[in-house]
Image (tube, rainbow, N blue to C red; front, top):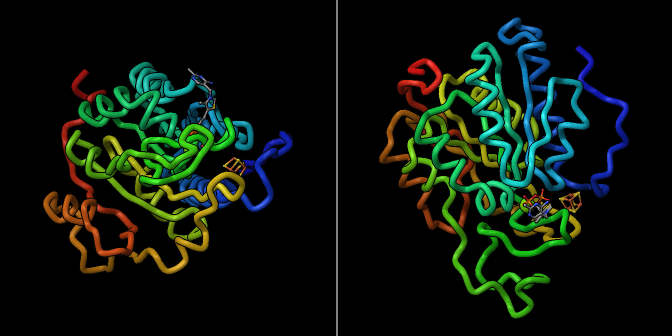
Amino acid sequence: MELNTSAINTWCPGCSNFGILTAFKSAVSDLTAAREVAPENIAIFSGIGCHGKITEYLNLNSFTSLHGRAIPTAVGAKLANPKLKIIAFVGDGDVYAEGLDHLIHAAKKNSDITVVVHNNQVFALTTGQFTPTSPRGLKSKSSPEGSIEEPLNSLSLMLAAGASLVARSYAYEVKKTADIIKTAIKHKGFSLVEIIQPCVTFYDTRAAMKDKFYWLDDNYQTNNFTSALNKANEDSGKLPLGIFYQAEKPVFEDAV
Ligand SMILES: Cc1ncc(C[n+]2csc(CCOP(=O)(O)OP(=O)(O)O)c2C)c(N)n1
Ligand code: SF4
Ligand SMILES: [Mg+2]
């Protein structure tokens, strides 16, 4: 199916959002080709920020929400039409600052939606202020002497809140990101895929990420909550990537 639109892409050249867009298109193409999902039953949502432009670049049912409000609109759409496969694209500022309450409650409810977090560790569209995931010491326009806060451990928070699938990927690892997104879309219940997404203009972490991550191996048991929490809290100097946790739990919309 044709997923491209005629919208002019205004992301900066080299922006890692292109990797997420490519990975998502590949996941949707595979799922629709295998008839696991019908294209007319996919609905994508976004918040406001560079990430939010993704809804313009995909030829799918879409809704561009307010800053921080992609999740409640997505949950509402799922309630209104449970046939829909819902994917919400959100930014780290968008969902871990402005809309954090919505995120926690959607995870707690185990609402049957997929949330893709474009985590570039800055408010990029507004030119690079620090966000809840920025590292301590990050100098930005809103923290000229360096951020004085510890970054939020978002995956640990999502596990504690009750998310039934929690994963992390890296935007330049397109194939693996596509596979994780596919698993998340097929998952019944709340899935969160956080994608480390370097902002090449305001916070370029590409060099720092080069040797800083590793993939969970095939022996890793995704159904073990304690292992998932340990991975989310791991402080080995290298960032684990992959599906940390996946479990079957009662789903909010079914109960409604
Ligand atoms: C309620 C509200 N507050 C602030 C803004 C201004 N604003 C627009 S985009 C943005 C930054 C978005 O950052 P993030 O969610 O991390 O997305 P990114 O641009 O990094 O993809 C802000 C603060 C807004 N549009 N609405
Ligand atoms: S400002 Fe950063 S996140 Fe936004 S399009 Fe440019 S590189 Fe990408
Ligand atoms: Mg951001």
